[in-house]
Length: 127
Image (cartoon, rainbow, N blue to C red; front, side, top):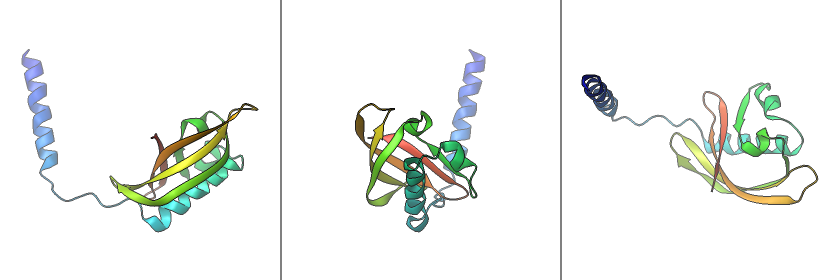
């Protein structure tokens, strides 16, 4: 019981210390870099590249998308509108058309969070 109390007090102190800094974190993306990076990564997927190919590029691009990681084919994509600030990056709504092998095509509306500094990272969220 004493150990739990100590851990709870330590956690509360750490959170309080972390909350005392009122300066916001700097943005890790700009619209001028984020959207082209997202479109280039999606085009590379559509053109048959793998996530490993993008990571091995110069500069490396890190993409976290379950369909891409599973090897599903991206048939088409459409980025809707401008990115919106989300945390320190930008969030883009995208419509994907994917296909698993020779099966039917599936249309998915997803969102991607994009950061470009210090490296380009693209993370998918399902809407």
